Amino acid sequence: MRERVDALLGERPRQWEVVDVDSDPDLARRFGEIIPVLFVNERLFARARLPPAARWRLLRAAARLPS
Image (cartoon, rainbow, N blue to C red; front, side, top):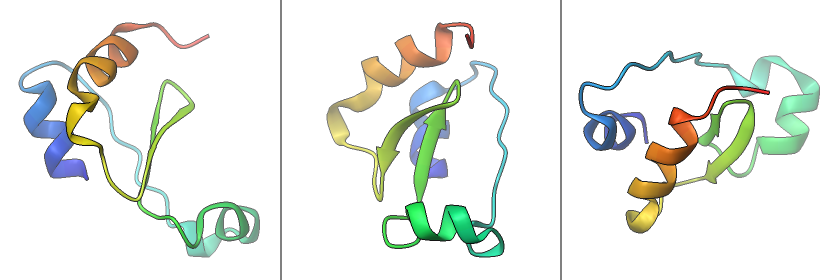
């Protein structure tokens, strides 16, 4: 999923935080069966795969400031 996001966003700035879901029991319970997951500005954006039509949604979400 990361390669797809990088390709879609091109040169736009972004920060990645890779989290090992298995190292946190709560995260493992919530996301263990659907990883990878992608959060944009602290909101769940995609599960297991990035839908092909998500480019514009991703660009808009990445442009918004976190609340």
